[in-house]
Amino acid sequence: MHAALVTLTIDPAQAPAAAAALMEDVLPRIRSAPGFLTGYWLEPVDGRGLSMTVFETEDQARAATPPALDWTAPGVTIESVEFRRVAVATSQDEASG
Image (cartoon, rainbow, N blue to C red; front, side):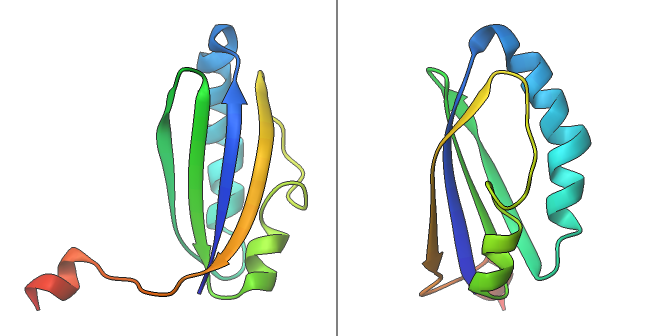
């Protein structure tokens, strides 16, 4: 598995429009991308956002992440994108099993 870590800034004046674009455009496209497994979009703090999406392969992660995934959201600027192999994964289901 490989994760895409995206840091971004959001213009506070455009935050509602950016959130709408995330829900209506970005998330459906990422969810339907080949190899998509899971994703987390953390609440912005002081106009800075962070997301992590996980895919089966690094190539799939790169193909579904900016700049390869051509999407825009009002007031959002992508600051950095990193790709990392997931070294360990666990879940609550595994902990209780």
